[in-house]
Image (cartoon, rainbow, N blue to C red; front, side, top):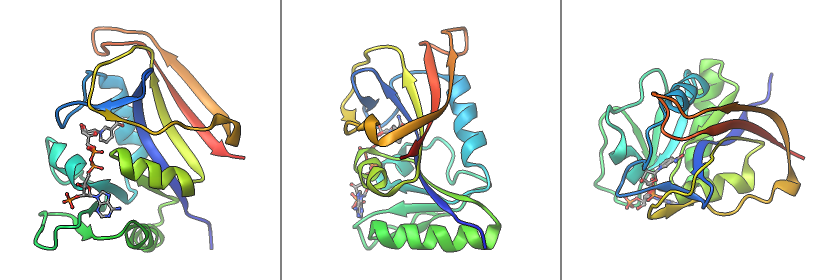
Length: 172
Ligand SMILES: NC(=O)c1ccc[n+]([C@@H]2O[C@H](COP(=O)([O-])OP(=O)(O)OC[C@H]3O[C@@H](n4cnc5c(N)ncnc54)[C@H](OP(=O)(O)O)[C@@H]3O)[C@@H](O)[C@H]2O)c1
């Protein structure tokens, strides 16, 4: 039996903590989206209802989509709905074990990241090197409790509006 790690993210955050605006992402970072796909593929993903609403194509293919909502009448097509975070994590872990996946990824938004950061063993974090206006913010991450195990910097380019660093942090 192998262990299944709960991850916070992939999270993309601006220097001022912004992660969203008007129900979407206030940046265009193609390389980061490709990283999101690569990291999450084959793994259960847990998200809030507004993040689900924000997806241009639902569900995220190749991944079990678990959506948190307190609205009992909400029935998203192609996703499992949960009313509690702990239940979502339990379902994610069961599904990961069945699929042979080693991680369950919490992919936002703000309150789910906060819940995940308290429990996760790993953070997939994209730090965008810009202050960007938005209406949704990530809670602070106490980096003294985490060790950076990987970091790769990318410049701004035709595909990517801002420079950014894709990092992986492990809980100490
Ligand atoms: N940059 C990033 O990495 C990133 C990642 C994800 C999302 N985003 C952005 O963030 C924004 C959306 O995030 P958000 O924080 O506003 O919303 P969200 O977390 O995606 O969704 C909030 C909704 O999820 C449900 N929910 C949240 N916590 C719950 C709990 N503990 N138990 C049961 N249900 C719960 C509720 O749904 P009901 O109202 O249906 O009850 C709540 O209204 C968008 O702009 C999106 O593009 C950014």
